[in-house]
Length: 127
Length: 472
Image 1 (tube, rainbow over the protein chains, first blue to last red):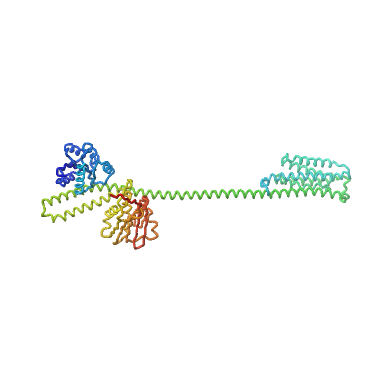
Image 2: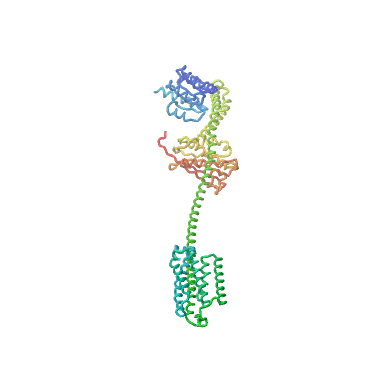
């Protein structure tokens, strides 16, 4: 893992996008999107994206819907959910099906996110 | 007396019987009297009265013979007419020497049985007048006694005595038999009536018993209905309350999300600031560190509260999952932090044995929270709450002991009743322990209370658990 690992963060709150970028810029190459739709087009134009973290509750398309769509075109990408809500049935199902690797709670814990992504990337490269 | 059917004669049956008896007696003894009177014929020669008497007796015998086929009134008038004819003809012929005049007594006696009173009186008065007219006729010499009946000689003979006693006997026997029949039948009637009354009374009593039983059944059903209505009322109130709680849960979940986002901003901002400080403002670090730390602690505490609210509100009907009882207790304590702070010293003695508790997290939160709220409210100034958990014989035992005011003995059986509360109106719904009780019941657990007034209360919840060996 390095600063070259490209990570897409999707959230409908611009402040969250800004803060996330600032906080993770030293760890990842962060790109952002304000909605699921925007996220999909960002992935199309950034084919080297390896990690996606998405908010759950967003207008138009929620986090899991966005990830399910993206997963079809980019099965090798690692997907995560970062939500202010408690775990929902939709999230639990996605976890069980392996659609997402993990879900994080807001307010985010930098260390948790960092280490989870690291673990997942390492496991992925072994396979 | 013996057979109730026989005794159920109507009064008409009795009258008919009396009349028939009178007819039989009259015809029997009348015949005898007539035969005796024939003696006169032997002594004094023929007299037309014998023919008339024979006709009368013959008619009586005929009526008697056909008594069952003739109507009562006909027989009555017939008998009365014959008696009148017999006695009047005798009086016309023999004057005061007539022996048949005694039959006049029978006229009112028989007619009163079958005819109205006034008619009876009328018949009798007519008879008296006839008798007196005949007397006048004899007195004036218009009617005469046959010469052979010299009264001075006649009364000294023996046979008139026999004739007279025979006629008197006919009357006496008729009166005797009639009276006896009447008394017998009357007794039968009365005892029949008594029997009927008794039977009817028994029937009524039996009906009464049935009614009583039906009434008891009805009142039992009414009680059942009442208790059903009561429990419906209680359930309705509980439903309203749990609906409220559910809405509160939805609200809490929504609020939690809305609070988590700004918390995320603060958190993100602080992380950014921290990085910036360590990279660019190293010399200010020692001064800025406490400020940053304050913000971080604030964010964490707010986020803990939101998390516990999230857990608490998770009391939908989602299936039971493996719950961490210690996390749940801690969450509840976070929610109650403002009430417990500076007032309650909490001691936690948690078990280290592994176990799996399958419950709905939200419900378990609610159950524990209600007990912890009560513990806090039982303590007026300062006090301690000891929370222990241990696993024994496949059961998880959670006990909460407070140093509060305790529960009076008489209230102990009622404290889990819905709406039982000792708190001031508006301060408590009386539902807390009822809800806890229901939740514990739902998971096949038990809820026990030990309390001493002034010393405190120990609440013990036991819940079935399964021990798991294959813990990772």
